[in-house]
Length: 146
Image (cartoon, rainbow, N blue to C red):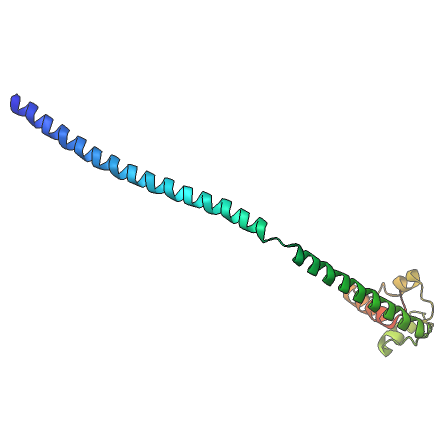
């Protein structure tokens, strides 16, 4: 019985030694993790400070100047477009492909000066959807339909 008790004590001692080694390893790992977390936290707070400190009013002034320049260019281009559109004659020639003109003539539309939407839709009812879209697109390009 004494030998059995002695064996149990040896096994218990060995088990406690293994647990002690495991606890030491866990404590070391915990210390490394805590150190890494502290390092990351200091970096994060440092990064935020760096970002806040990196904002300069000179860059804002530069961007504001570029914005004003771009707005001025846009207004100049708009004025040029208005001047060109006023200089062009209002009654520009309206030309549609011959096939479209022939189709519309067959449907009773002879004058392209004033085509009403209802008349155009009635004339195009015999066509497929794709063909109607193509004819209307040609009329839009020619400036007949607005």
